[in-house]
Amino acid sequence: MQGHMGEQMVEQIDCDVLVVGGGVNGVGIARDAAGRGLRVVLCEKDDLASHTSSASSKLVHGGLRYLEQYQFALVRKALVERERLLQSAPHIMWPLSFVMPHDSGQRPAWLIRAGLLLYDGLARRAFLPRSRAVDLRRHSAGAPLQPQFVRGFEYADGWVDDARLVALTALDAAERGATILTRTACTEVQRHPLHWQATLTSATRTRQVNARCLVDASGPWAGRLLAAGVVAAGAAVAPRLVKGSHIVVPRLFDHPRGYIFQHPDGRIVFALPYEEKFTLIGTTDVEFAGALDDVAISAAETDYLCALANRYFRAQISAADVVWSFAGVRPLAAPSADSAQDASRDFQLVWDAGHSPGNSSAAAVLTVLGGKITTFRTLAEQAVDLIAAALGNQHGHWSAAACLPGGDLFGPLPNRRAVLEYDSWADSILARYRFLSPPLVRRYARAYGTRIHLLLEGCRASADLGPQIVSGLFAVEADYLMRHEWAVCGADILWRRTKLGLHAHAGAEALVDAWIARRASQVSAGRLPQPA
Image 1 (cartoon, rainbow, N blue to C red):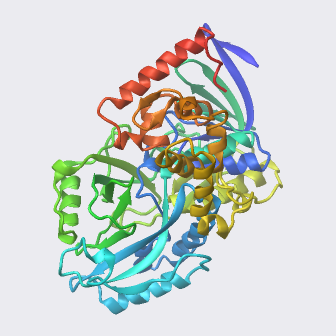
Image 2: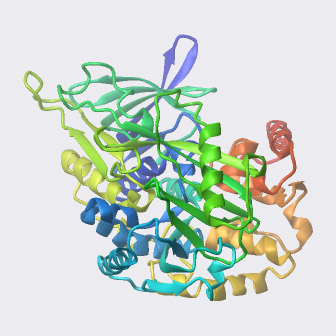
Image 3: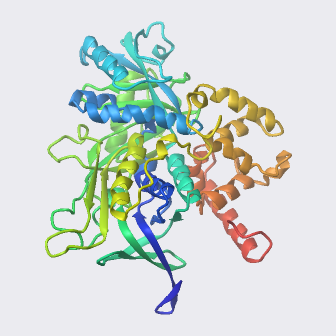
């Protein structure tokens, strides 16, 4: 249905749920709701995962440090989800062992061992090994460390490509019927007795959406969407904003494990193998009050992370060694009395059904606060439980038994085999695409899982990949990401859908942007088919 707003045509959309925010929680809610048969529209003012959800430590974990704060329920909930997620998307998530060096300045060794035993036992583990004490003088993880670290502990958690997790969750939502609108801001919302009326604006069009329920999953922007007085008294809350920053430096160790450092100042910092040639170090925890569209690591944070790394590693680094850094603002539901590093990462769902004194019937709104990547699925499930009950939907839960796109390596259901036998599956993919270089096929397998066959559909020789736009990026992949994963510019492709930006030369983004512009002109001239 079309209407007019001045001289511009306005598209009219009716839906059950409008989700504002294209981070991990927003796309998770859109996916769950669409899977229950609800009509869903999601809008994101920038790219998917362009803020907090691509600025994490890339971990699927229970949160070992939260045991010290007696947050046992949060840790157990995350541990249950950890193995469920690893099985649902084994191409973009995988087990990772962590080594925790110990010295006299830390908590007593017996206390750390007790905490790890509790961590092992809080939830059933299907395939991750139990923790153990290690002699760093003999363990391969000891060689890169300063010589004073002679003992430590090893335990297992998981790794995730966070930005790809968001993109694949959005893809699953779309394939279940959701409408995903990136580069589309929600510029106005009005509450009516039975629905919300929202104006969604992009560079090319305006849409007016009538939704029975509104979900504010805008992360650090949560609460700013709604005008004063729109939400029932007392229901409007704002998140506590804490910035976390990371640095990436040339590789400090060549084994596949990560490190967790319990620094004497009380902070927990990780050093992780990253993109084969690099080490990822973070995170910091700093209260944030700046512009949310301009979040960056500070010089002080960079110096802090370098100094911390230098305390543990033989190889010394400085700010000059940092090849990339990123920062994100976490929207926490924790009280300000807690320190930033100790504040809970649990989530809070603020539900306003619209029933308040003098207002017996009004459209519902849900505001999402807090959360972490590991618990995004269960957050979405609980959120849609509230929405479904209000809208009379009785579909029930489904996402715990579903793979994310590309994760169905050995069948449609999440299973241990997909985690334990990923390498054998990848070997079969290498054999099938033997006309391509093995490193390229391995990267495609990791990024796309079984969707590699869609990516390479029609390719019978390396020439079928099309021109190499920048190092490692061929036209066939860029085209796929534009058609299926909402990529529209070089940054989307090089930094969020892939991490090729780390490996490419200076100016790579501009080259990809130029290729996209040429492709768009060819489409408009009819020399290429219109993207799906």
